Length: 128
Image (tube, rainbow, N blue to C red):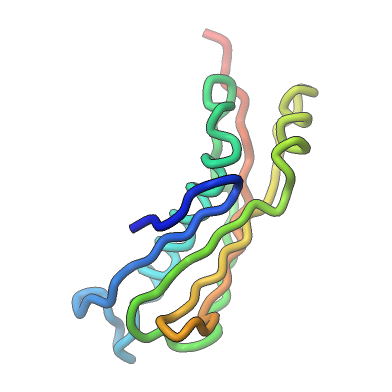
């Protein structure tokens, strides 16, 4: 569920559900990764969605750190690390921009349990 999506930032959360828990009673690693990657994509679209007519945003790599066992509901907050102006300027120059989105995942107590960096690119659309 998304709480906020605006200006290169997105916040979403996943409630605690027994079917999504792992062997230590927290959300499975796949749930955490999916939550964070989804938040990163929403952050990209909130800043660069108006460029969809000329380029497709694609994640190219993602690195996740599992720092602590997450328990209960988890929340992901993603933010673009590059400015919109910088990314669009590269696209205008005929380049394929590459930029990172940082995501922190916190548990119900606000403790950072995981961090993800997703590298995105804008692939220019091919002429038809």
